[in-house]
Amino acid sequence: MKKIEAIIKPYKLEDVKDALREVEVSGMTVSEVKGYGRQQGHSELYRGAEYVVDFLPKIKIEIVVKKEDLEKAVDAIIQSAKTGKIGDGKIFITNIEKVIRIRTNEKNEEAI
Image 1 (cartoon, helix red, strand yellow):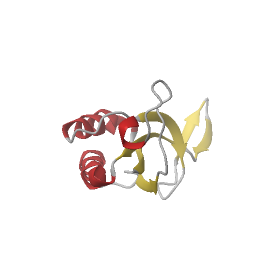
Image 2 (cartoon, rainbow, N blue to C red):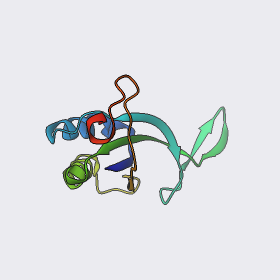
Image 3 (tube, one colour):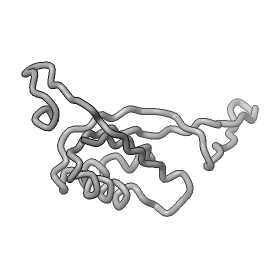
Image 4 (cartoon, rainbow, N blue to C red):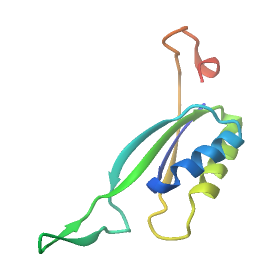
């Protein structure tokens, strides 16, 4: 099993969710996060004072998939989140040793 963590632009969440549904990936955890990278933030004015916004709002999606479903899930995220501009985000993939569904005590692939 693999865990996919995708950091994307907030307005792309619905597109990514729909794309994952199309490739039959069900279940995800979504968090509102802030990030700092090559995009570098921007300056804003507030009551006449300029300040720098370093950390930009992003969405973090976490998904656990079977190893054989990894590539189609990653491709769906890339195709639906990509704008071609800086700040599109990143995808991190890690191994998952074990999953347990608390309600039923199902384990591993049966639990996802």
